[in-house]
Image 1 (tube, rainbow, N blue to C red):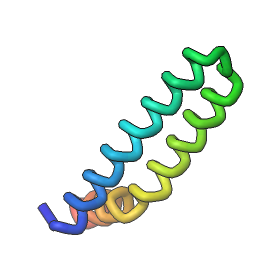
Image 2: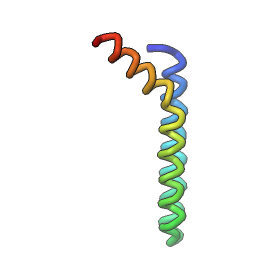
Image 3: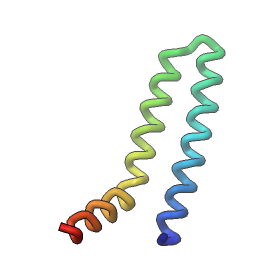
Image 4: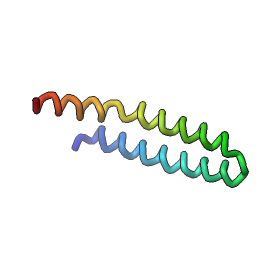
Length: 65
């Protein structure tokens, strides 16, 4: 496993933890609309950060074919 991929996975883990924390605070405050926007933003950020891993996976799959 590449060290770059490990760093990306750690970033994704941190983003997901912070996002879930913010979502739970918003839901406890009764702001479910803001919570859903934070959830969407976290998912988009995670997908954006994971592009190098996805491209490496697709490249490996193409090499197998």
